Length: 305
Image 1 (cartoon, rainbow, N blue to C red):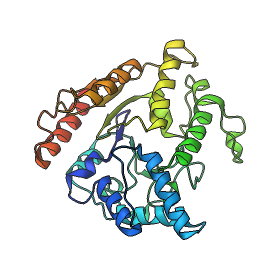
Image 2: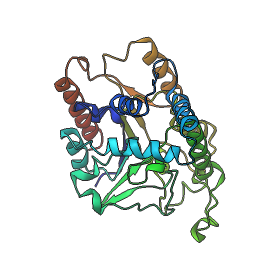
Image 3: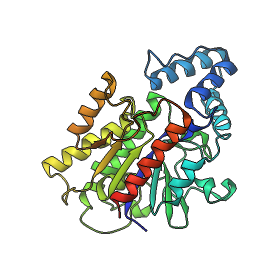
């Protein structure tokens, strides 16, 4: 088994019609008779607008539970495709995803067999949440459909989650579980081999390859983690030198547009290597999208031989 990690986004789900995040939002809009505008508003704020609109109409404390329950039910229809199979066939022990669905896990086991193997059984956040399948750990860093309340959507949820992430990484977590009473923050125990509790460990301990993820600037948790990691690396704020690589794959046909150019410059500034050598014809067809992900996976395999 290799010693690297993947971070996979919703791009791999878009290979099948009806599986995109846009499709989920359209269904939500139809159910509650609201217009969802994500073109001119960052989605975490657009979600808060959706929530408040429905809350004012229904006057129910269970409004958010119902919204997230609806989204979980819709996402449950997403099934595995060839790219999910390719990913799960890799000798990769840590697979992180921002996706809420279980399409990766169901390549290997039935969804009913899954349980949260995190040391802390979080009901809202996902610092520790993961599924252990044989020698693989699947980390749903933005929650998953098995606990609808864990699905990370609005600013309130992102902000609380970011606080929990920062505690674990920089200042130290405080939980009732005895094991955490004397546990130092992550950057103070990198030099000491030991148990890894969170997906965050991957970004400091081993090479991480990111693909199928737009990495919009609204993903404040991930951008904070990348910037904090680079601060620690450059200022030597951790108890061990941070030498692992973080690689971000972007299709070549997207790499030169204005928004992507700005993002690539920021990624470069936080020490992330950007790979844009594949996907020249990504936008042409689903087959080209699939070929892109196959090429990316092959490139990761080659790098980790």
